[in-house]
Length: 65
Image 1 (cartoon, helix red, strand yellow):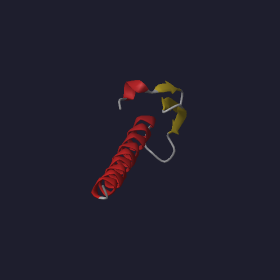
Image 2 (tube, rainbow, N blue to C red):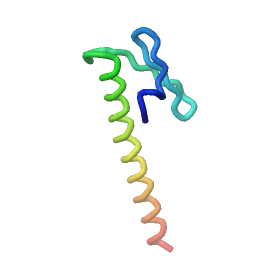
Image 3 (cartoon, one colour):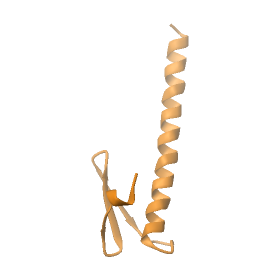
Image 4 (cartoon, rainbow, N blue to C red):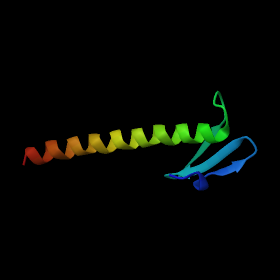
């Protein structure tokens, strides 16, 4: 993911991910770009965990064959 994938309007950043609109505001961060980077880091962790879980399911299914 890249900062250029975001549409920044005032104090709000918008982005489409898998058909869903993501809205990020500054919140408690020092700036909007810090909030975007935090969201991207959390999303990367979530995706990695999702792929790991899928891998475990596939491995379990293959071991039963």
